[in-house]
Length: 381
Image (cartoon, rainbow, N blue to C red; front, side):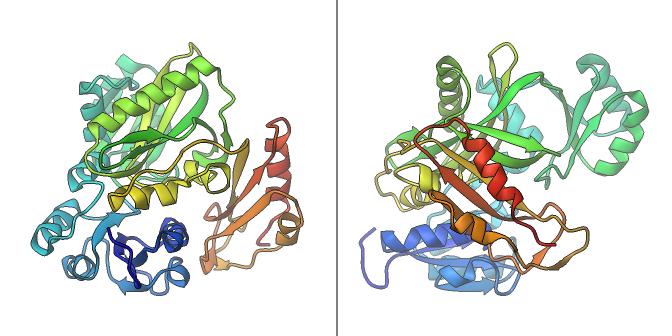
């Protein structure tokens, strides 16, 4: 990559909040961003050079993206890896992470099998096609168990807790497609590591504690409130995961710390991830800058943490879909070392991610409570 004006162009499949934050990180690097998204005037548009309106898997759309860009990447797993691979080969525009990685990630059963075969510790799992399959699997794994759609699930969607035999039929009907079931993990806390694969180097950001309710991420605490030994083991597992992935970029690696102090892999996202948003203020290099450095083949930045940091999501608190009008933001803006991030979505509905608040301090004590108090002062009602 040679810096010029206008600069090299990175084409991004997806123009949601991750595309928006990639655009914010691109400008200081001298990069231009071009996004494609089916929603006109998507959230990324105010901070990127242009948007191509089109589906994530439409070949004509992705071909135009490849023809207008020097590098390709994606911020959503709905991109079609076969189409990405084909247009990249025909236009000569490299795509990172590799389409093969996207194929592996898109199917949770394929993902778990690939990682398990590579020696990465994962919860016990089984493939499920019918209610009888689920009953048989739960007899082996025990109740409760977690039934997951193999494709398309996110933010808790596509995941169903199966408490007992009476729940089996309804759970399979609700998934309505290929699925897998996992043994429930008795965990102490959930953790995440943002892993980075560059041209000739690998690194990880500090281990983060992630706090979920209703299977939606609410807060991220960095550094994680876990022992040094647990954090080191989490980084080791993250490096093992990076060995399995192909191509350059940032990978969101979600983990469980069990009550026995072991680390198990939950899931992987081959892109910047909600659990890494805290790095914008909390680290010398954000996950978004790191992803762009990696995709364009530049040296990776420092992942060292600057100070303790908590990030908390701003979620829709309304019962009906409506225009997004956030109230109470002055409370965040008036607070020293608090940072508001607005995603630019035009509509809000219940539990939709609309932004996040990050708070930093010299000491971690009380930081989570402070962040929650600021977040709870925000409303769309």
